[in-house]
Length: 41
Image 1 (cartoon, rainbow, N blue to C red):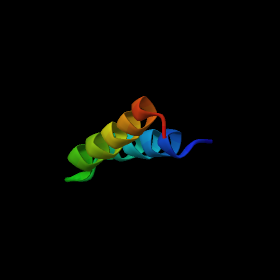
Image 2: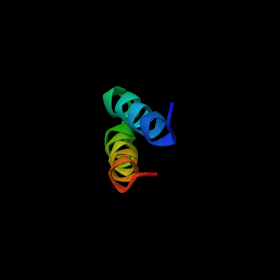
Image 3: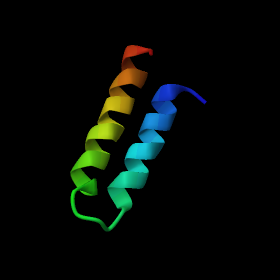
Image 4: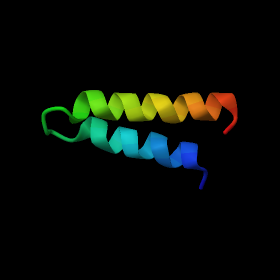
């Protein structure tokens, strides 16, 4: 599995956790993974 796929999966997992602060963190991590995938890393 590529690092960008792991980042997207981790971001989605954080995004759905019902803990304060993980919503924004999950969105940022998933966005970083998507950006890495788009840039080809």
